[in-house]
Length: 126
Image (cartoon, rainbow, N blue to C red; front, side, top):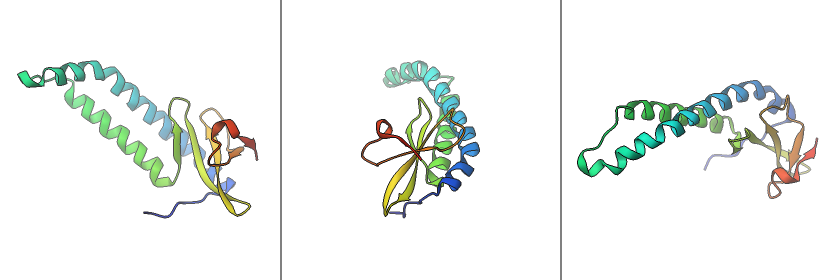
């Protein structure tokens, strides 16, 4: 298991512009997957009868692009908590223990933190 990356507030804030772009791409790919899903489900349901879909390749492309964005974010050490609101956590060392710096899409910078166990509802200002 890889060692968890710990962020300073400055490091987390430096990644916010890149994270915003990645989350927007990730959300866009997810929306495409959701819109294609009914057609893909029909093809799955009809698979015993050699079912298929002209949109299968498009679905797979969106799935790969979604996965690549998610892997980039994960590779940076950032934890996606709620894609619907763009909620992300950055592991951070505070007073000798790991906590999460908390940021969500729409915020200009990381300015909140919370204990690992408390989650978003336990957010406190930095």
